[in-house]
View 1 (cartoon, one colour):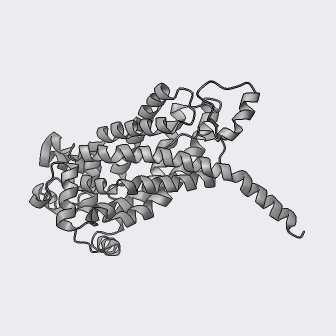
View 2 (cartoon, rainbow, N blue to C red):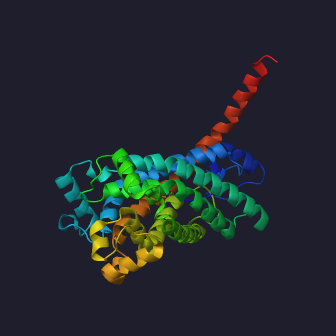
Length: 341
């Protein structure tokens, strides 16, 4: 999730701002964060936010994957997210909804670190050109799109392994077994079979996400101060809307990732399914228009808190790490002075 850079310094520095001209009532606890936080700060904050975003709601993501199955096993047909989780835990074990979490953590850290670092750098450069350093929706959109390409390049293989391990009666015993089996039987290209579909889904997802988020911020936080409650509310709303409108593409991505045998056999697809157009055609052939919205409730339930978590965690860690930078620089200067010439 792409998050704004306009966070804040602590209230201890507000006295300096007030001495320069005062501040409006209600903004006394906040001050803008330095615009040029270091690359390391963005990467660290992004990695932490990404890991938490994907792990906290992971059981719901597992349910979403199963509910998007086009030809589910009779034992894996669910009417609700809660009912699905309850049945999975009762029949398959307490830890079954967490299967595949390890590869998600391994992928989410570096993917989000690269994503946020790229996003912040490009957004800053374009904003300087377009709005003389001010906020620009065009800069946000372009930066988010470029960052998404890099993020998905890392995350797509992890998504393939994760979703195959999430499916009902998954034949893979472990992460290593899944990676080894897929690479041997389908080749390394299998890990990027859904890459184009992933990009086709995520670029509009991020566009809708930003439009919704900015709209909410303009209404609830027009001064663009650091307000955790508005970031959470706006993030949740943005996640819900963007998840709902991109669900059809997510269903196609799931089919390409899982290569669901029963579904492909029913659609008379020989070999492996590849390409977004073929996936769209297959989904429609198997279930018509309603098939494109399978699992939409689980996807929205997963995305709302995930996006809210990403915004709040990213902003907090960026604030925290930026606060530590002056101390780190001071320690480096002292160490340099103490070192022999």
